[in-house]
Amino acid sequence: RLGYVLLHPTVFQPQPLRAWFFWEGGLSWPGALLGGLLLLLLIALVWRLRLAEAADELLVPLLIPMSIVVWLGGWSAGSAYGPAAPDGAWWGIPAPDEYGTLAPRFPLQPLAAITLLGNAVWLESKTRAFVRPGQHASLVLLGTSALMVIFTVLRADSRPAWQGLALDIWAAFG
Image 1 (cartoon, rainbow, N blue to C red):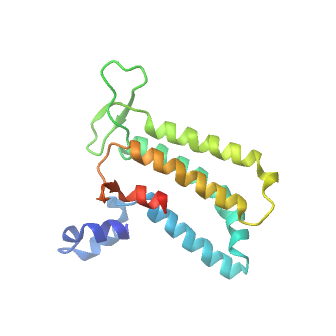
Image 2: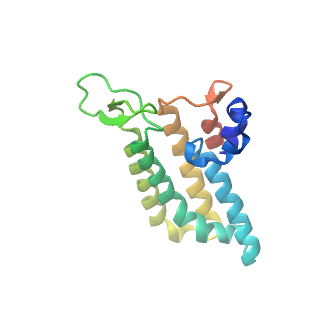
Image 3: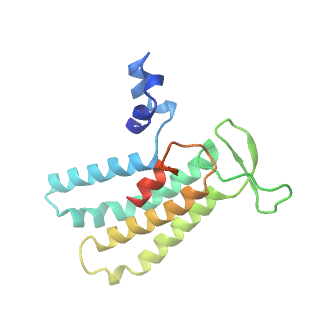
């Protein structure tokens, strides 16, 4: 939400307290991930764990399910939708856009959810191969980020950009 407020200052100048109205939108996965990583760091400090151990214990079981829920939630909320499907395309699924217009679209949200789930299952099958603390969490983050680059490129909704790329693509590269 902070990123949204900073990118749209004229919206909040007349009523600065509206910046706290998160229910009005302006939330993004990069902000959620950054907040989650800061919380992970705080938990590691309070519990006196190494950050890598805390990431394996908390990030691994939470990141993928949360990502899947967010993509499926975007499907019903009209965010992060795919481009319109050509007339008569068998693969087009009904999905609303940010204005509520329901149209057959590329099935981006369910495809993202299924792909993230497949990635989680595959990584979980390799759990015994992770010998160093943090290795599992690092691969989950890397895999999720790589998939987010692909899914974000396929999105048809409007988003702020820098240097010709949407800001969330830059966040996924980061």
